[in-house]
Amino acid sequence: MKKISTIPQTHYALDNSAIIHLAVMRKRYTNTFRLTATLTESVHSEILQKAVDNVTPQFPTIVAGIRRRLFQYEIVSSEVPPTVQQQAEILGSMTSAEIAYCAIRVLYCDRQISIECFHSLTDGYGGRVFLNALLVEYFRLLQTGKSCFTEPIPKREIDPAEWNDDFLTYAGEKSCSAANISK
Image (tube, rainbow, N blue to C red; front, side):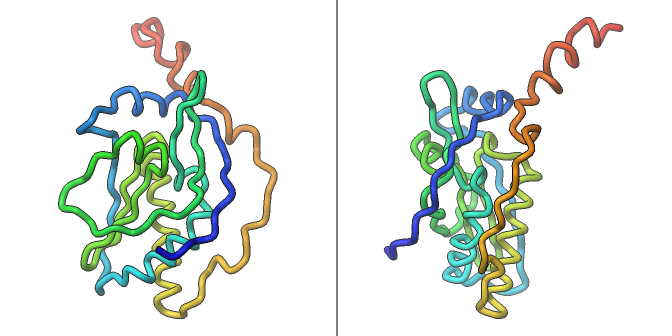
């Protein structure tokens, strides 16, 4: 296997609402979802892998694993991009080891490109944003051979609201209490 340059690891706190997916996980069941795009032509797996390699650094909280720390879970961006795999018929569960290493898969089959993602990392919207970026990069590489990620994304100041754990705001005592529902 060709050595790919490593991506700097970053750590992010896991939102309280995402912990539920870890709590209900079983050996044969993980809260995993699959998003698929069907193309008009067969998928070139080598070009898809290059697209994954190029897109991965732009999504450090989606191409990541989830690890348990002393009193919390945290998202740890993967050091290397996931390897594209042949797609199975059914949605596969992920082991605890896979989730700790990289809780997203990139799959292909004939004319389909799919991602399978552990639900604690993102919801369907975030998965769709990742899949769309992957498709844009795949098509650009397929047509021109040039990546659209030739230059790193400029660093920007992160709004502290982006890191808030909004579970208590939107699903906490004030918004979902029995008293509010019965009024």
